Length: 128
Image (cartoon, rainbow, N blue to C red; front, side, top):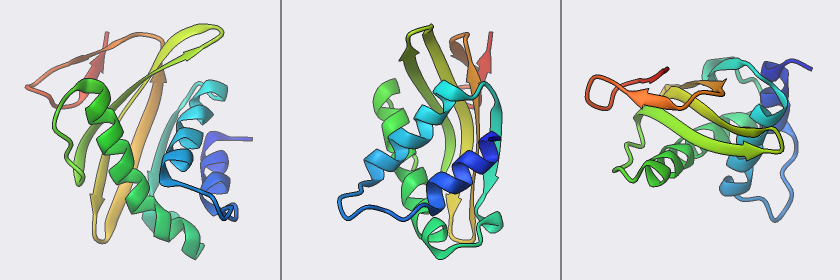
């Protein structure tokens, strides 16, 4: 299964009565444990109503979570995302960019085995 299909399936699968946005975010990040790739996703491509309803809260949660891990102030509407993950094979990072505005919700995330460094005063993280 391709990563894009896995994300689409994750967002459109019926949610359990006890679902949380935190759990959905964790499931999205966990996909990178299984796929070594980059994904670009745009809400305009979403056809089911559930995915359309959860994408913006999901992006806001990812922004807060990334800022918390980096000990910075979150920007809920656009910016960079960085997450450190650990698997049995070791540590890897998920980095990317997002936009979370009315009519424009999209993100690009990529997996790297190398720690990101910030350039241009907090702009897009570069992979060394």
